[in-house]
Length: 447
Ligand code: 5AD
Ligand code: SF4
Image (cartoon, rainbow, N blue to C red; front, side, top):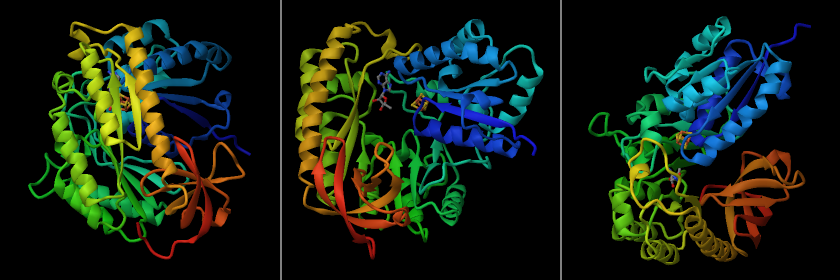
């Protein structure tokens, strides 16, 4: 039997990066490749990278260090370094100089041109570098993981220029996808058996501002809510500045749109928010949270927070802690500020010492973990609608699913229920996950 050519992918980035890796896999499968069980079997290795924090880059460099011997053992393996990190010219140059065994270095814009670039790299004795911003992102092949959940990008790039963030520089200007293309993709996903989609964008709330006048995120959510056979719709990431009341009302009315709001706060002091160029004050943010809770009392709210932004005084950080105490987020992703070359914040004076940043993030995490646990404990005894995702990754005896509010629940189940909505009574709570007992299949959707 003919041996099929194999590929292997490694992903370091965010959800958008995961989606891009699915497109790269789709291209490779169109070219006749199949996934390799082990990296050593691969003829093509794709490493998709992230630039958002220094740590993400360090991880990739340390991985590259290990790849040299793999290349020596498999000199024919084509090694591809893809994504946001190498879109930065200085990084691409460094990779070419120090890791010359990498065959293809590509920024995220070249997604549609991957097959031709791969061919070019195959024929070249020197690394091929492609960083141009040209490229269409429609009609691309997508090889999604089998499952019930799919990522669906609704826009690409970002125009916000938050002063700490590298994304606008590496992903380019914001561009909305055509609503008919998005809807067609969602309908097709449902036909293939997917039950939940997450609409993705750097700022989903500004969706449509480059399209016709009556197209916006609220309208898109309404359209998606009408897709028959789809069970749930999620979306991320939201920008508090652009979050309209109309969207909250559409979510409230919607049948499938989950009541989970991921609303990055980033900082709690107006002084820091202003220097971050976030475009809202702590008062605006509190008002938005109040509106969400007034209209959708059971909504869950999660956030991103950066500790140790340049010039963040003790009093500023105290304001962040105060916001966390007042709002009581369901969960928070917390980050130590990491200077990114080329961004405005990286040039600001008063960069904080690593010990100060560390101390602050520890305090923040301690506070938030306590709140997350308390909020989850309140759910014990209640019955929730859970979409079954399949066997738990950590305990194959158990199954995993999520509540509409995006809480992960572990429970005993069977394979037949995967992809179905079930009723689960919560029996135990931890800060990050819940445990529950299966009651039965959900007859109809409800909150
Ligand atoms: N340093 C630390 N965290 C950052 N983020 C973005 N840029 C930086 C940076 N330079 C965080 C923000 C954003 C999340 C995806 O990553 O909180 O919401
Ligand atoms: Fe995703 Fe941003 Fe990282 Fe790129 S830089 S992979 S867009 S988080």
